[in-house]
Every structure is written in structure tokens, then in C-alpha cells.
Image (cartoon, rainbow, N blue to C red; front, side, top):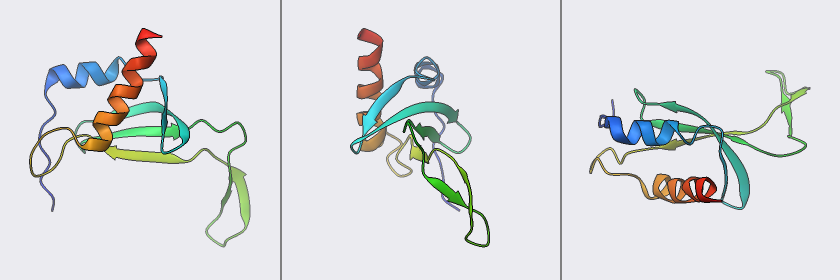
Length: 98
């Protein structure tokens, strides 16, 4: 099992203030919808106007749902912010200034 570093309280508060904010990541707009401190993940939801069709367990078209992206907050070895999370934080915080 992979060890996860604990997220300090200041970082957790900083992330919680950004819940609901949107930013661009890998050419797509995402919205921060949840922080899972126990798992060390930030959860983002695609902000597409027309989300893709999801398939049921038999491969049949079922419903439309936005894509979900989970981003590791801290590097499991170094215990520092992952590069991906740092980029997201920079983008999300720019929305606070705008």
C-alpha cells in the first residue's frame, strides 16, 4: 500500500477556499468539487456544456455525465505538492484575483 503524507491544515484551508472555482488544465475547463485529505486527492469535474455519453456495464448508452479527474495533492515520496497540483493551484488562485 502506498504511503500518503498528511496534508497540513493551512494547505487544506487554502484548498477548501477554492472549491467551486474553475480553471483550465490540459486544454479543458475543470471545476474543483472536492478535497479528499485522507486519500490525498483533489477532485475536479469537467465543465463541458455537453458532457459525453456514459455507458452502462453492458456497453449500452446510459446517460450523460461530466468527466471526473483526481489529482494527487502531495508527492508520496517527497511530501511536497505534485507539479500537477501546483499548476492547478496557480490557475485556481488566479480566479480569486480576477
